[in-house]
Amino acid sequence: MAATVVCRPEDRVQHLCADKGYAGKPAEKVMRKRQYVPHVRQQGEEMKAKKCNSRHRARRWVVERTHSWLNRYRKLLVRYEKRADSYEGLLEIACALIAFRPCTIICG
Image (cartoon, rainbow, N blue to C red; front, side, top):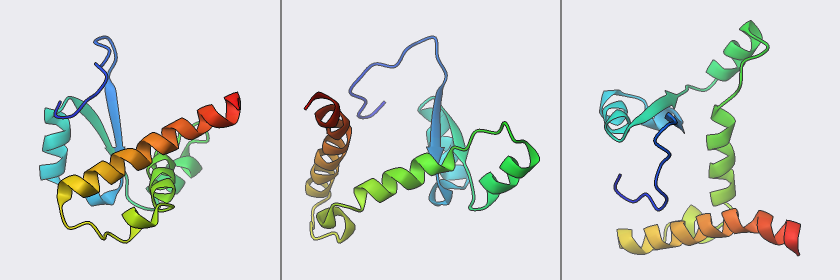
């Protein structure tokens, strides 16, 4: 995997939840090549599945929640960076801050 920081557990299947921007054969091919089980949902599909089966677990909200958290950082929302590596660095910093935030709330 191109940029995985932590090694994957060998005994577990890795799932990848994505929104409709990743729908289509080329994106699915890349996800499967990287050994993920893709879960690409269209808007409204979660509600239909939930109505049919009350025990259905929603997955799409994870993607929407993450987009919402990343949109809090204006420098990512309105892309001022011209170079892709600069933008990716800012994205990684934002993700680190999002992941670190619960630790500061609990510990401090």
